[in-house]
Length: 160
Image (cartoon, rainbow, N blue to C red):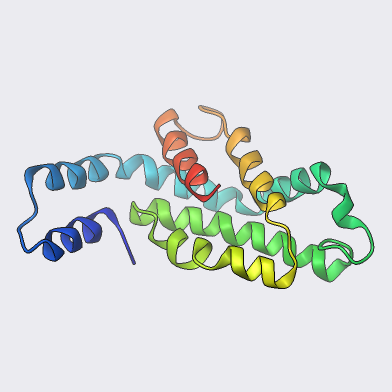
């Protein structure tokens, strides 16, 4: 799984060199932000069901046609799967906060998802709306500290 540390080491190794000063500064910056990332991951863990449900509701409110017969949210089974997918993205955001990199999102959330959704005939815009809602709903200090919210929002922006 990619993290800042593994990315820096892999890049230096691929170039046949030791990590440079700027490489090490990048790692140090990531370590300095680790407390904020872990705070965001902890807060998300405590509210992941509520955050996912609110995000799911927001995307259905914006795209009510999804409830029409034959659409992606037309049956109870489809609704449960859609909510599950939103929660899956939120969990990947949490994992990325913990590792300090985009590896979990890259490996399990982004790579190939567009093709999977296209093959299944699922629209991607509702997922973007759900993640955008989650991003815009976060508030410091109500939900977490300003630095933790910055780390959380950066990963949501990446996923969006």
